[in-house]
Amino acid sequence: MLGLKREKPPMLTAAEGLHAWAVAHARAGALYAEMGAPDTVEGRFELLTLHVLLVMDRLKSGGAPAAVLRQQLFDVYLSDLDGAMREMGVGDLAMGKRMRKLGEAFYGRAKAFDLALEALPERAPLNALIARTALAGEPAKTAETLSCYVIDCRFRLAALPDAGLLGGVVDTWEEPRDD
Image (tube, rainbow, N blue to C red):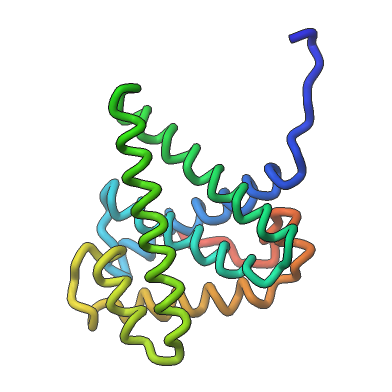
């Protein structure tokens, strides 16, 4: 207001960095061209949600600061979805209902994702979840390639240092291919 610019809280900046990573990886062309994800609004929502859930899964072991960062990441994710829906023409009157549905979808997927990860190395639950969500109902056997990708992402995220993640940095990861 008086020309003073407030700095963003560090956790918000970190969450924005992690969200940017999730967005970049969810947009990788190989997920659509090679792994069968539908290149639709719903397909992109599912892949963004999947990548955000992967980051949130990684942050589970980080203690109290990671819990705060997980909430910040969720808030940034919802804010991004809100902005995207507004760009697609969703009006203010419908926004609350749509956001509530997206929040419910996120929490449902998060619970199913946690259960699928707990079942590893058994891949059938993860394959079924990916087939149902990211692959828009394809048979579970077609989900194997994307399941392998998810497991690889989870492994790579686990190898990243806590300090970097808490700072919103995922710079040791190869950037996604955009074919």
